[in-house]
Length: 72
Image 1 (cartoon, rainbow, N blue to C red):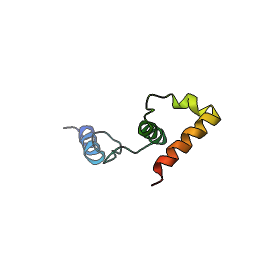
Image 2 (image 1 turned 135 degrees about the vertical axis):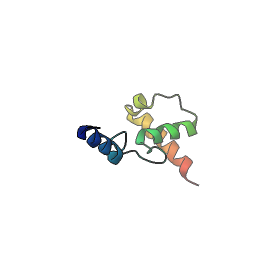
Image 3 (image 1 turned 180 degrees about the vertical axis):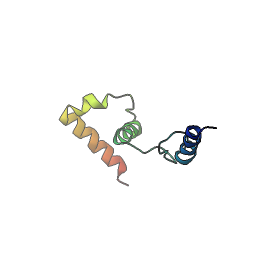
Image 4 (image 1 turned 60 degrees about the horizontal axis):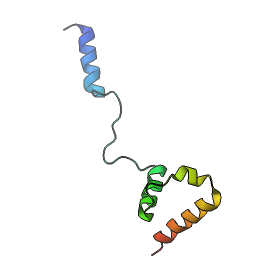
């Protein structure tokens, strides 16, 4: 093996085959994922929530309904 091949092999062993950092465990939850889960709890999982958020009054009533679900 040439010296170049050894260096390449060493880098692969040291850095891993992907060369990047892999996260372990479940994927991180995003803000969008939380919105989708809340809408599914209300039974409105099919709703276009982005369009709904542009109407401030309708969005506020939806948010208050979700917040009332969380209160024990």
